[in-house]
Image 1 (cartoon, rainbow, N blue to C red):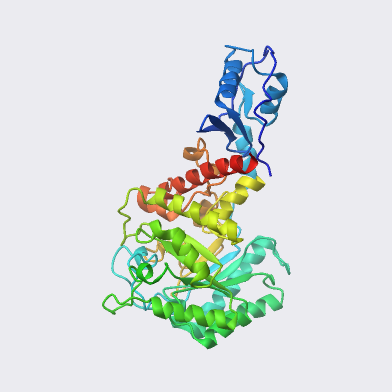
Image 2 (cartoon, helix red, strand yellow):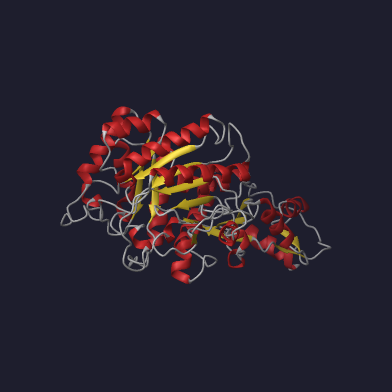
Length: 474
């Protein structure tokens, strides 16, 4: 663990400073109950001092008083760059991190939108909300197009990563929609093609496959196929019946809820041993019940692989509760506590926890930032499926299409808080990931703007992590 706690009784002695010193520009202070955490946003180093000792440190730095601080303590603060020379140019420290992260496209993820059709009419639908006007006609991806897309992706993967039986990072083919199982025959055929490319060494053998589904069309045949090919089935389920049916209803079904049909699909998946994950959209309807819902997922639905997805604004749906982001942050922290106690992995929180604990840089929250291609049923290829409806950041590829040289992918690959001056003074700079570029664009006019909702989540999570560290160390 990179986070350090200095004993509170370490500060003794008297020394005179020759050089003018100050706290680093990347230092942030967190105060609780007479204790202050001094945290460095780049290194994630943190020490805890009582407020009297913090006053002594500040006095030492300002040469007001030298009575209650010693050389050993100051040397430690300097070593950890919590304290720096007054004329220090800290841009170099930031530049070192900028050079360590992805600054160019590295394609290792494919989103295949098998159809733009869906049998549900969810009130907050991410895909439907991508349309700023009338939706285009219903279209299913053809087998020829799907196979071509997978082979094209294999070429991108080879250029970015080379051939290897084992790829050391997360990489995947994601089947998406609409509801992808509406086009189930093409799903089957495309999976078989991916397996062929993996067996022949064109794609790495550990390349994952996922399908995002509402769960209502799952049959024993589909579930068995997914189990055979080790496909993770991500089923959208927002909670127990009353919560789920508040937003997830049948298309043309007079607002009839879908809970029973989804749970039938989940039961089939579990019965055949398919890898099953619940994908829970955290809406204004369920955010205040989220810890109870999480326990129900584990005990009632019997699924231990759960992912929480905060709601995003779209062209068709707007979040009305001004406190929504704070509620989500606190609810997900409570769910993480449950997960930790029960040995369950929840990806969204754990990405930030790992960055804090292991000292890794969590530089982007979205694969769209230089790591994925998205292919629509009509064959257009783009950066992010949130733009499926408007067509922005999508192109009509020709035989010479190369995302590594295309301005869309080159720009998005640089989209990280570490490259965004507005984020440089943020306490959560290296654990945030920058949230959703589309959300920032929709709300504020550019992918380079801040995604305020995720910003709140990152800051609240960091504050909790710091004090959880302190409580664990006491």
